[in-house]
Image (cartoon, rainbow, N blue to C red; front, side, top):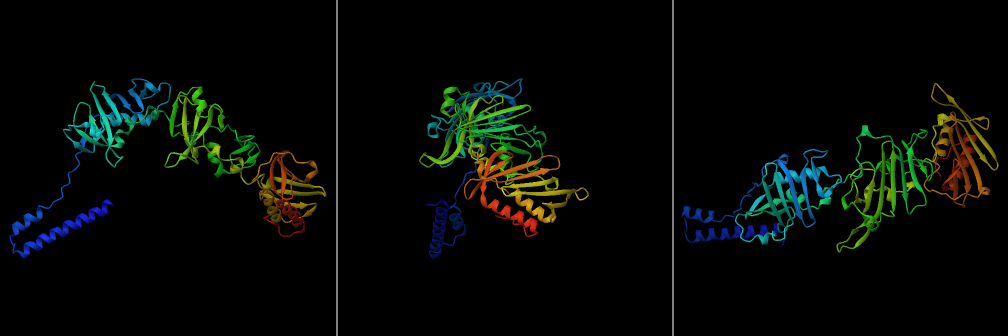
Length: 493
């Protein structure tokens, strides 16, 4: 029965009973006010106040060591008199420590307090789980004092509290989970889980080269800085498997996700070849490298961990992957990393590319040459320095409206990037070539070849890169005619 409902019923029964008693007294002539008062005041529901106790009253600075034993094994946190870190764990020698967890362990051991006293002179400690404790820890202080505690079972129907007793004593305490959970963790929980530190905004290093190699792809994805700065769409560009500008919103996790990458836990410490093979890291599903001046990171992504149903059976959804990281000191572990932190396993090049196959500011363009089987259309633009914009436009020697040219050019920039394509086209299927020539000598060239009735292959700057819907070409050809005739330029296809 619902506990709240039970309380309401009990209260109602008590009220009804009290009412009956008063009615009976009235009918029998009971009019002694003091007797009546005694009767009513004797019905009291007592609730004992919690007896909070400061079990250990020290500070973390007083702690020399904390020795922990639990069902996952044992380890000892020791204060360093000298060294880079305040604490060390001998069982994790050579591995970077989780500073926050280490500090928490020392602090909790030094300031241990109870939420309540359960029993002051317990004759049977086994009923609280101390015969097979969840944990045991000994805190030793710099003055030589040492105290040992046992962590028993969780309180019935509560995971927020544990039973606790000091070794050799019989007072049983109720303590918050937050005070002793670090004593029930395995030593692996004390390994640093930040695989690559997140720099502050003003300390980001110069972007180098990101390379993503996946077993299920026939190519590498390579991301670099846009050194030419022609696009001004994003700071980085894709150079493989195609050259393309990035969608800033969709690509940030892909390009910068290595920095700040954090694991859920360290699964295997100092793995050997057998462990690497078992977790799929001898022949990883993906390898992500990020190299630049002063850094060289290599992330290997192995087997997946699936979300489990109520019966513990793997479902289709992937929860995490086993990973290793190189290029960071003290991280010789197999880590479990959330799938949501690994965009390189799910995102394809099409997902992070912008919709712009080519990008050159129209004011920087001096000529657009369109070559078809039937002839050539030559669009010449002049630059107006005072306006910092297009000054005039000619199509095959005939003046056209600047605004119409801009709408025409905007449509040209919409040439889509949704489907990558790498098979060389049949040269006899040539449809047209579009050359965008800038004043400074840069620019882009698009060569179009019929693939099927509905698809056209695009070579971008001589490299077969995309396949687009043929109706884009149909509308583009209509736009050439409309530009020359002074008619409305189509903006969709």
